Length: 208
Image (cartoon, rainbow, N blue to C red; front, side, top):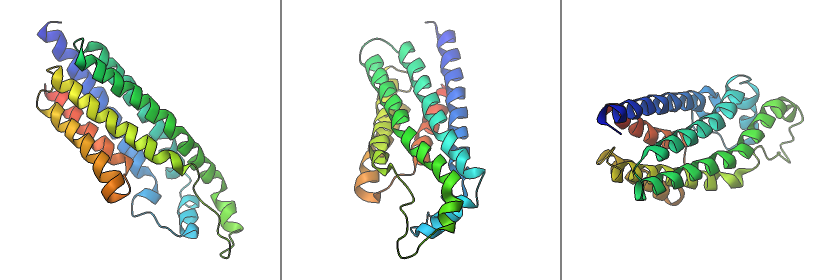
């Protein structure tokens, strides 16, 4: 691949990834529920969801679409990286992002269900026996770990492949930081934070 062709595909990939990041961030902040610290009280949770008939389902739909789009972008990058470690790491990152997409589907399905049922759950709310609002929470950490690992591996692949020789390692380090900070320190991880890491990657590809 000559330098002009390499420039064309890295720049176009950076643009597509950047658009995907922005779409994801729109989804992340479209729901009023996530524009502030989410409440722990079930009644307050249901009230926020019931009063947001557009934003709540919007994020439930946009998130998996963005995850799938990112997996496809990663796959496209993997096919263009040099054979050997760069390509293998990128392929592993792609498969992990596909897994992250699949793991998120039960969460989105449950959020869409909540959007339909929140008003009725509020109407029948019993403070003495409050309902469990969210289900399928067990998949959150497997999803988060696979996505952060994928970002770290893709950063390393881009560094070893010579496309982002310095910034790629920074992205890999951010992925590792998320893997440590999320489950061990913060005990939580907002999905939009992972896409801020991808924003760094997208800008790097655009500037190459």
